[in-house]
Image (cartoon, rainbow, N blue to C red):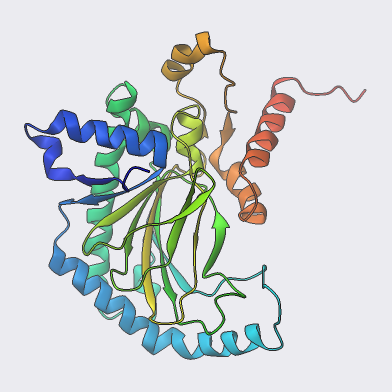
Length: 316
């Protein structure tokens, strides 16, 4: 099996650009996960963000998590499939930030700066993905933005504390991500993130100061399946408290998502099935109740909604 794709972003602006773009294409088409180095985010800033969030867990969330953990494992003798061994909070950046509302987040400026830098990387990656797909410049960002309203963008900050019974509970159950493109700053000391490839669970290797990138369901729809979202999970560990800062660059809630016409035309001769057209908010409403289930029924449900909207059933 080929090694996990790691892309040096500096090579995308030099003489090795062609080779780097080919690695990126292969990563999107065959893996759905990759890591990027030299992404432009200061290592000092990343270190500060890590410190701030680990301190916030110790101050605000550790005691509450320990209470949850004791109850979760009490009398458990078989696999627990309805909860995750994680402690989380959510930061919203776009359309309106809520960082000032998070308790005991000591360096809010560092988090705001990190979010701004991650947003730039996400938009650069979307342009690179679009270029590889042969789409017009800016197409993917425009598809997310619903004209002038812009995308939604937020961060899930998670801690995965040590688990005495990783055989009974997952850090995070297997799922695909509903949104667009996901950029993860993960712990480089404690592993646990895995993704499914060719029926086998593979580890995402922790690399210091790297950003892990994976593709969400919306990019699968827009690319009409050329790029696919990938099932992934977090395996609970007996040692170490794993940090995960996952930023989700998603379409705006009212954005209409549909396969890029240029890609559908290219694939017409192969008679590939066309993905549905829907409003992102409608997809999210469905996803909330079916996150840990297969994505294909979600796409089918959206297709059924599209058919009803196009050909409403007469009632009289």
